Length: 278
Image (cartoon, rainbow, N blue to C red; front, side, top):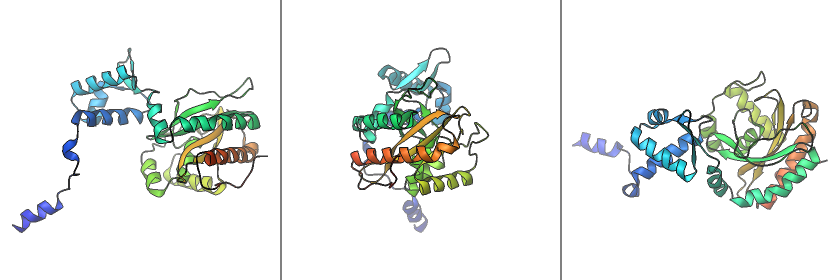
């Protein structure tokens, strides 16, 4: 009797709403979450293996998501990837179109002040996503596609947001980072990354010193919502010969100032940065 009671007491309790779960919807969301965290496309076989789902179910769900525009299928490799349409869901989580609209004049001002491409992005799963940009007027510039995904360990905007996340959310994301080496400057260890985040929070802006590519560098600052949470990042990106260590401080002041202005427009209570752009 005691053993039976012990077993019952240690069994995990089900959520009261579990009986209303829709299994096919559960599977669809699992597949969407998997695709959103992968930098590359996945075949039906790879998805089946990762999610332990029947191959026929994976094919049907992936096909439906493709028809609805939430996934894209490469006809040559028969592999699936998340589409840019998922950004519409991400927008809703960070204030919807309001964020992009509020950022539009700020991006233009930042581009004009820096002379480099100004960008807006947010976190999406285990990576970052570009939401908008205003390209540099210079003939040689950095321009990316809207919806472009960037890694958490190299990208300045990702480091800017992670540095200000609460410990629980920060740790959950950091556990998912694969410290892939792209250049000689790439951070490849957890201890070095944690020191980097500490430095980011101390100065208020983050730097990509050519950690993803030797050809460009970036300087970013976090954008806060009305709760004080970092929901986005503003940054400038340009060729490494222009965005170089000697101008990091100047660009850092610019992005901090503009990020603070955007934060205030989103209802942030107080200016998290005291520096003003020069």
